[in-house]
Image (tube, rainbow over all chains, first blue to last red):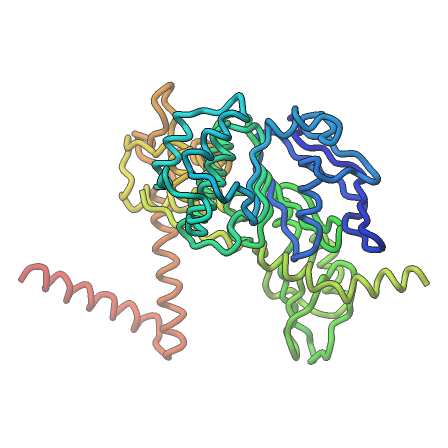
Length: 305
Length: 130
């Protein structure tokens, strides 16, 4: 399968802060690619590199095989972009906005635009700044979809929106990829939404990729395993296979990333038995990875010494 | 076709669809020969990735629960699902397990539970006759 976006070794610094650190990403054509991470983790910075509004300081960014900074016309014309902060011209009426966009994009499909406008129930004569937050988000979605972009790029599209608008957004994602060959990248902090629609998921933390791969693989690799010890334990041993421990006394649940054999060996070495195992939700994985901070930092600082 | 998706319950979404379709077929709420919704329609209704629905349909086809008819769409297997009986037993087994667990907790013996089931059956059929 061909990759719509290929990013390799991308590093970005703002003064002394490293916003992106050696980021590698491949987005296969026809997939929905979910980008998750805490606020300030680097998601928007990454998206700005894909749009070509930031130049790669180190590493390489290719969109449709093209450098988006060197050839913005051939990249931006094929991307539909929707961000949390809508940048639609506030003083235009919806009608003017649609005409304005049509002039910009050769592939603008007027009948599709009109269908979307009616589905979203947006009034043609209303000025953009007078639209409700939800209707403005829908208008933004309309202008991003109506020229049928090869890549739909959504940066926190659902932030602060009610469930009905969020459903419209997800529905747009689904229809976009149901149309042959088109691709969606979206960042979100709503993990159940990512879990519903994403084929691939990537988590960024402090500018680094924590995990990246097919959603099913990511979920298969993270498991919750409950151990029962013979005698009560204060704190179970920390090991690289365990992201964090929860529990008390004789029964402890570990959040694991290791292989089955590794977990079984861990149980034997601790003199414990495995009493329950379950796959984790993306939400569980996110929280475990986000709070694994202390452990990883300790691990890195020890290895440096 | 009523399907409910819980993205965060640990079971992959495609498998949730597979299991629920099997359940619907086993319980007779999806009848042999009935047409399944097209992939993109179901994806849009459930708000899940169309590739996920496609995968669920492939699994169901391999299991013989549904069959693709050229150019026409996907249908519940007309000769009845080979899994139906097995699934029906599975559904009842889960109920029986729950009943037994509760009975044990309350201090009932298996014989007492069986007697109770017989008595309830008698009372229910008496009620129907009335």
